[in-house]
Amino acid sequence: MWELTALLLLVPSSGQAATLEKPILSLHPPWTTIFKGERVTLRCDGYHPLLLELRPISTLWYLGHLLLPSHKKSIEVQTPGVYRCQTRGAPVSDPIHLSVSNDWLILQVPYAAVFEGEPLVMRCRGWYDKVVYKLHYYHDGQPVRYFHSSANYTVPQARASDSGRYQCSGTMRIPVESAPMFSAKVAVTVQELFQAPVLRVMGRVEARGAALGGVVLRCETLLHPQKRDTPLQFAFYKYSRAVRRFDWGAEYTVPEPEVEELESHWCEVATASRSVRKRSPWLQLPGRGSPLDVASTTVPVPQAAALAPGNKPLSFRKPPLSISVPSITSVPNTTSAGLLFPAGGAPTAGPPACAPLTPLEQTTGALKPDMDLLLREMQLLKGLLSRVVLELKEPQAFPEHRDTLETPASHFAVSQGTPETTAVES
Image 1 (cartoon, one colour):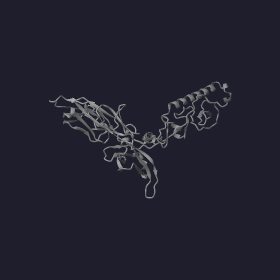
Image 2 (cartoon, one colour; image 1 turned 180 degrees about the vertical axis):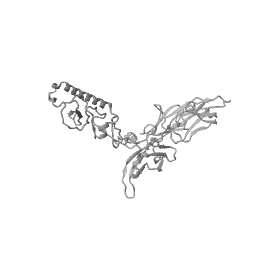
Image 3 (cartoon, rainbow, N blue to C red; image 1 turned 90 degrees about the vertical axis):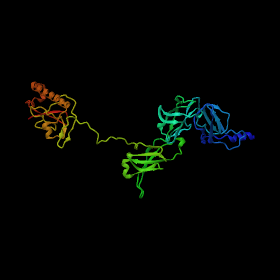
Image 4 (tube, rainbow, N blue to C red; image 1 turned 135 degrees about the vertical axis):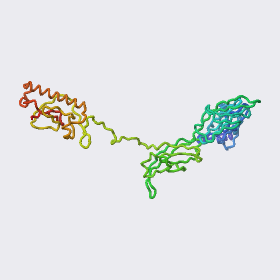
């Protein structure tokens, strides 16, 4: 009964397991590549139960998918592979990949992730610590540093551009100086400490007493989960001028007089030591782009647009598309609102109907007439003249106009209101 009770007490609840963080696996010394025969120490730091167990099992160790027999907090290993650990009720830790080499020269890099702004240290090591001479370090095939003898290569403040494949070369005296030897290439990735910031509009604040109103801007970024406790500072700029220098606050209020220039603002985020600094793009206002401006919209203007006094373009009505001959009626001594053609004369070169009518338009017509409109006019006039000639030759065919058509010299007017054409006696 006691054994059953103890076992039940030692099993954490599902809620507890969900709140526990995965343990941290560390390597000592902190190099992922070792020579064959060497040993390193792995340590698992995380949650450990405080209850007294009948058979204490505080830590589980894995090599690949194989469960190792040890249950201690730290173990010594010399076998290559991927190691993980797990404490009771917690998730499995992040892996550590251990490599074992038989080469004369190895390049050792840190096992832990290197973040922006942190130092990146590499070591080119000879077989069982033999001194390496004429030492070169390479980054993506390009030499980056030379040493006369064994020395570590350090990047004081790593950047994302420092990621890549590294290699080293050198000579050793075994017992005489050897030819240059090269290590295997090792991939190094510099992790992003925090994302590039984005400036957003949070809302408007009203003026209260001596405090001026304005618009609140917020500089937003996201830290890496492993570095979420890193303190960051924020600065705000208008064009190239700093409106608020680095401070711990992520918000800034744009004064009311400068609200019209919101899109000229941007922000910058940095660590307290300024080892990592990132700026945001210019502020992008939601819903604002390039709305259609009616005043600046280009409206197609007819090629035959005449200029009225004052250089104001005339507005033209679209003429009728039909070119059929309308009926002819007799209107004594009247002129319509349309253009009047003199007796025996040709139509003017202007458009058939325009508003407003001016003496300049009635005498000279429009400047540079549109060819399509002019062709329609000529076709319409041709049909009218053909009808008049036919009436003169065969008046019996048009008895209703026998008394009115006394002379071919008649005035024709095109009405603005209707497409009908009337004959006006002189």
